Length: 322
Image (cartoon, rainbow, N blue to C red; front, side, top):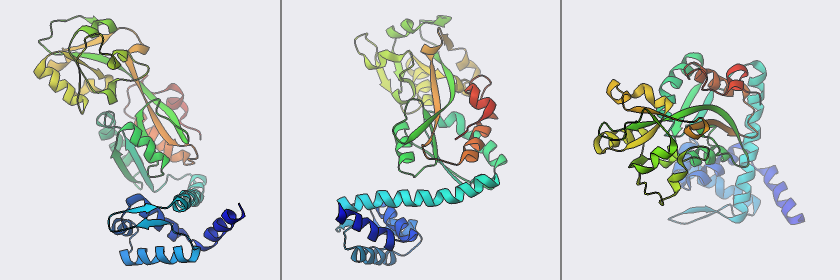
């Protein structure tokens, strides 16, 4: 125990913030050239710094050879503490900006690809109009990757399907939208309204990332016993085109409706019931995130175009308090 405390004391005493950034970059990219480029230094400079630091600490942070760069067991602990230290340092500047009533200069977001087509075009326009000084960076990634990116500190916040939170990540419900049935023109089942049981005896084209969720009608997504043929596609737009060409049906979220042609809208049917035919979308942040004004700047941009009644009532009226 004494030896461990002595090691951490030496690390804290000797490491500068810049050195913390260097080792975190090496861990992130597992490549010295890419890490150096991300830190805007030369590779020899970064490599020399790492060697010097390891010599001063008398500990190996990374094992490296011609093919890989991997943290040692002690190195992994150092990296975790380094990330925490940098996060806490960044919080000081954020606290000052919050007190001054200003939004942060940079905002890194991640959005699930099953949500991005409906939100991003209008969100980017409204957000940039209201926050022209903010450097906005948005990446599309699957829901699980959104959460992982927030946990690792690579992303400030993310928007993804609800019920994805884990330890260290806070989930804020944003909005809920209905699902609708989209039929091929050739589909024989032209019911005016569909019940969930009506969907189990027709060829269904589906994307699990977008449509198979807990609080939905699609429990049969995980069952082959009812004879439903499930095909997976890469986007909801792809599903619609597959249905148009191959028959059968799919289910689409409410925010897809404005993107349909007049002919396609004639093939849309309502699903009976409330909770069984909807999906919820949430905003995710790290549980120690302090940039309340930044979060509310995102909420305000969403409120500019999300349909009335779709956004969570408390957020729509009062915004977010962290």
